[in-house]
Length: 250
Ligand SMILES: [Zn+2]
Ligand SMILES: [Zn+2]
Image (cartoon, protein in one colour):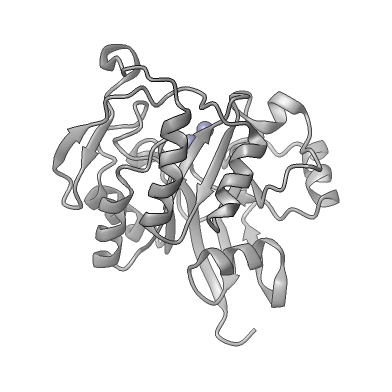
């Protein structure tokens, strides 16, 4: 337990790149809000893309917030999985796989929303052309395997929601699926059946904001007891190794 403490974490935050996210989701604004709320570790998780990760990573270093490079992948089954890595290089390598598996369609800004790219100061630097808001030709198992192959973590997103969730699609967490953890939604009622299933599988679930606008970033409600911010430490906290743990406020 030496050198360990609780870190406040929010491992699911979108940026202005996600077509459904607000124009205020730029590095300076997001990281100021995160600091104001005393959140120490965030993950940047846009839909099927990581092209804004580096801008947030750089700004995070400048402002003393740990930013984990990530992505929210939409699988072939239309299930959302959060993929997390230690470095931008890893997430870019994963992005190659995802981009190759997305249908080659153009985004229609007027129907789906804009997919803006930003630099670390929050200037718009361009736009992602391809349509991001759709299922990639990767199964749940493909995503878990692919992410693990480059030492990332795979978390089933908002499993208590009615859309794009593992639970809604399958009604359970399949044993064959080697996901690292699951995420519950801050404001939803906890379902006793779901909690019982999670206990049985020994998941200490995460609570993440899934923020699409600044007001959607909530005060800390999820904590990891560990040594430092890294994928290895988080994984150990998920698995309750060496005294590490995940704690949520509800
Ligand atoms: Zn989602
Ligand atoms: Zn999301």
